[in-house]
Image (cartoon, rainbow over all chains, first blue to last red):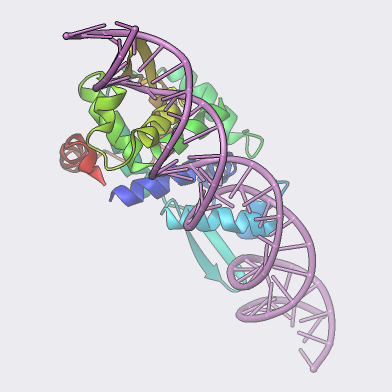
Length: 111
Length: 111
DNA sequence: TGTATATTCAACCAATTGGTTGACGATCGA
DNA sequence: TCGATCGTCAACCAATTGGTTGAATATACA
């Protein structure tokens, strides 16, 4: 259970992977399409997807020769619960939240 | 701002550091006291504290020859906000939450 | 069948991480 | 002032990470 937190937080600690999650928030995607906006090799993106899968943050299902990537937000819940154990962050500032969200959802430029 | 998320999540991706945060949740502590329950050198714990400080999750203030470590939950808020952008984790299961919290607050055995 | 597409694998590289030990600088207390 | 304590620094080590390229595998299509 603790090890799961390790892999989830480690997976989230990379801007490429967070961008991928934001992309998958909008729709399931094939590996090639996930990789397209990034300036790195397909193999590199494939590795990032493996890390996200190991962490349980996404799942990958192969249909034909295409591997579809799907967001699996359950793993995030554990991490979120952990954070709430530090419940000291008062009411979340919703303005900041919306600005943040806009930025992230702009896609892979999020770094 | 994205880089801040990198360091926060990376800092959280280690069970020793999460245990340290849980300990500091109860009280401010000196470096030596933070290190005491861990089976690793003081220097190793000191490095962990540096990583937590860089991430903004704790602050360290030297008084005399003792360096006091203090939880700074603000950095966690940004990470928490990011997670809420995936707002799909429905109502948090409070039972699971309480069990979780107990385990974590038991101290450095949390791994 | 043969070729193009989708994805991973394998080997490699540089940089980082998590740990060690030993020496060091600073501060306290007798 | 002297010795003990607090904490970091420096050098080192093994393992991991994030990237590359080129070959390999699997599927689709003509």
